[in-house]
Image (cartoon, rainbow, N blue to C red; front, side):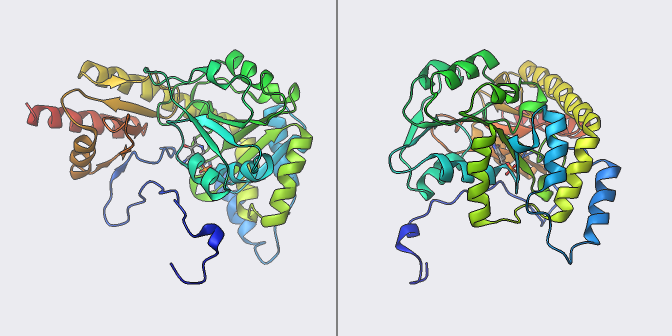
Length: 354
Ligand code: PMP
């Protein structure tokens, strides 16, 4: 640390992203990217937009908001495009939390929530999961905090029913409720329709997983226009040109090709369910994931050991050393070929351990 660092940020517990290895080619199942490429129209749109890079991009991202509004069934004023959904989470902490209003989220969930809470000096209530790793929606009724829930949750992939989300939103009418739908396109039900009924609901989305655009950094906040205006004010006070021209163009083209991406999500879900059955047959415990990853544990191999042995075999998965989940690994659902390689590697590891 230099001697110039602000005392406000003297102690930061920064988020540690999953590895993006460059030294060796791995079967990369560690950061929940799509195994499928962007559609040709998206590549063309991004390339065309590259020709305009001399100019600033549209700070209101109007065409992108219109395209999103058509697909999500809301008004363009109900959408804020952002630089990856991490950015909308950051904006939401700034807009809806302060020294009076803290934040509540599941104790085991996306690791960025505590980072943001600490960064913004917001009091956090970390609510334990049930013993089966599910979120108990009763724990979130009538809280005095902003609520943030990933649905499906990470790294478990387990989802709440939409009726349970609605109960949470209804029971916290004086607080913002943020439903992080990073993984919703792989099989859970979206809360976006509820944003038209409840002015305290913000739904966040990302194109990093379902829409093959992790490197472009594109996400969305969807909610009541007044909520979106608050978030837009935060955006315009920190980074008005937050979504670059190539990404805006790629996003519009991706919405136009939404069917291609939804087909890919269905394929990923099929691969997920087939792989889950194979792993269960090998003795693994798995949560019922509706996301594009599996959360797996085997009684005869430790979580860190499985991670290491897969890595030695050229397969990268994600291990969290957090107490309570240290026996598990989160495995992104890749292509059918990648998952076949994973299952083979796991068989070898189990054989070798006998
Ligand atoms: N929410 C959850 C639950 C996630 O797992 C991730 C991916 N790390 C994100 C949000 C952020 O994704 P991105 O910033 O790429 O949109």
